[in-house]
Image (cartoon, rainbow, N blue to C red; front, side):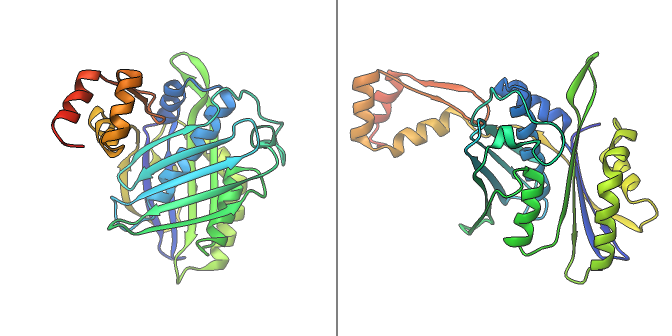
Length: 297
């Protein structure tokens, strides 16, 4: 099942449906950060959520930042994405191994007893919108549903599944990863929305399991059979980063001449590691001296 996002419309009920498959990129994120099982699973949920949320923006260049802060051992996560399918993210503590048993307290050993979700929407042109909700269910999916209702004032059904599958000859907990978002449009049929929400709570996981390995479009049609579904958009998803040595140099220039000279005197060079992709950059002393001599700072 390739990583992709498919957005559609249930025309009769005027409901928006968005489905994302993120197994490959979730495994890539896990490998990049060398994350233990629970940390990797939570980051996978965050990346999937950001993919779904970014698809709702009118401008494909607009970005969504999702931040979770908590007092549990994972401490929090940050995920970021745009409407073109470019995703990145990290968890603060990559070593969390265990979640609880299935049910109400499944994520409590990871998230703890207090925290919040914050969403920053970069709408382009220097326009930003930030909102947040306290963690109440201590489940990223359920608390994001509350976020949509309280902050965006949009009724939403959000479902995610992480299904173990055979990957390279071994069973992988993140073999198949799928997220689904359903929202009524302003003229949407709220009764139909409620009916679909209740049905999907029962059928989502079995349908994902039955269609593991197939495309997101096939899976979306399987979830809404004979529902007058019109696919509106479809694009690939990928875990990647925009960091570069040039960006690190621009950050050094922003420090100012005095602080940059002090860094050179004390450290002899500059080092930086990207939190999103773990790439380590070293800016040599000669490069720093060249920046100072050029008058760029």
